[in-house]
Amino acid sequence: MEIRIEALQIAESFNIRKFRAEFRVEPFSGTTSEVFYTLEDTNRFLYVFDYGVVVFGNYDAIAKSEFINFIKNYAVHPVELNLFEEYKIVTDPEAQKALVKDDTVTIPQIDASVVHIVMLNTGQSVALEYYEILTDELITSSKHYILELEQSGRLSISKKNLLKYIGKVLNVKNSIVDNLYILDDPNLVWDNEELHLLNRRLKMNFDINPRFKDIDYRLQIVEDNLTLFTDVLNVRESARLEWIIIILIIMEIAIALFFH
Image (cartoon, rainbow, N blue to C red):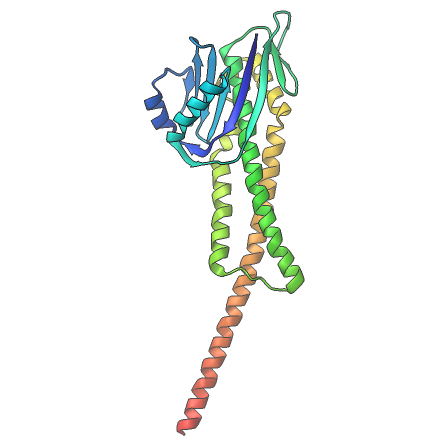
């Protein structure tokens, strides 16, 4: 037996509470930030995360499209990027334990908890890819201003646009910080050594921890650049104010001499 896992980044976030109330299917497990379903009548699995990711298990194209149209009603800022991750769960009765490979995990038999862990890590991988794209864009845009400083010795960006840029950077970082829990081990692995090992192997397979650290490092670089840009603008504003004061003093002296 084989289960095809497909994870998609559909939006920046989902309203999980409203979705759960209106989906009206009893979940296998869930919290305020994620919900996992085992749909036994259709042999399907479904995992929805509040950071905008949906993971399908054994969904055909029609069923997947129908659910995506439904979940978009609870989406905040839909993502127009084609971000997805595929993985497979294959059963082998002769397997002694879970065997994790690049695109497949082989297990002795289908177990909802095992499917849960596999879908969780697949969804995390897609979310990290989305944040990698966002941080790449921030790095690229900051390089433009750094190159301008190198070539002309000045920064043409206005204070208003810089504040917008700072707001964008902080918004991305806050979004990542809010989703730090994606690196935490799920509760069901705490008392199950096999699930714990499977979760660790999957994290290594998807490079979850190194990728997150790389994103955090990139954001730190962008923040350092923002500090530089802010200092340059402050110097520019200070120089402008000094010239205004000098002009006012000259005007005051000229008026005093004229009337004298």
